[in-house]
Length: 352
Image 1 (cartoon, rainbow, N blue to C red):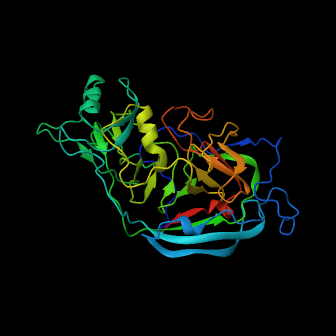
Image 2 (cartoon, helix red, strand yellow):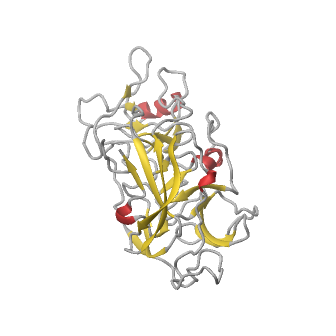
Image 3 (cartoon, rainbow, N blue to C red):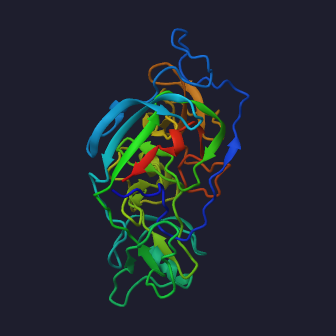
């Protein structure tokens, strides 16, 4: 079995913001679940009710269902967690890098001079490559597609490697399995943990993890753009699949950026239901709460306490598609940070 580091950017030598933390806002109450006096613990920062709902998840690639087990949290406290194992197998596959001129692929983040931002992988982007001095079109009209090799920080983009001026499209390795361990009774930590790091920060309801903001085109030796599919995900260089954008609300993000050539085909779009869970066990919603109201009191991690579907006052996150104060780009729809304790040694997700 192979164990790999979690959340590896597409193998590019892009600049990453080191994993860090900021002091959380403790002016408000940290109680994040219903206040049932018969079940409350003495620690007001710990929920006494299970937040995680395993019944919401797809069973397509699930090897073993979620089960409740004893676990230790990152603060050293004993608790209980839900754990399950998924295969690295996609139910639906879509084109990422188009093969020929005139074809449309998925998405990418272009950080060149001409029209930077989230872009469709198409002829308009290749023209901007050329304007900025990079050539991605081969003499026979095909697109220079490269399959990156090596793990994180391996420095595989080297002069003469063929990667420069290319669309990067890794191969999905279906032999991997991923084990998730998520706190059943979320506990707020004393500081927040950013998501701009080489770690997975959440889990989609289709069984695949959320990664940090999308990798941009590397420009050390010429632009090579990591391709994403139309729902914002891709395999990393050694094969495991993950999302760099939250797919359940991505069509709104694309519309905000005037992108009409692609839509997310395989993830239903929703803005007021649970679309996944963060690594600390708190639920993630779209832009609206369950009662269809738009939140106006989100904290630095885009979370708040609000009545949920079952009328319990629960802390949860929102994906807003807005520029967060803690991010430096306007095109990402991930969470900027998470507030809670995770499984011990950041054991939220493990590929083998």
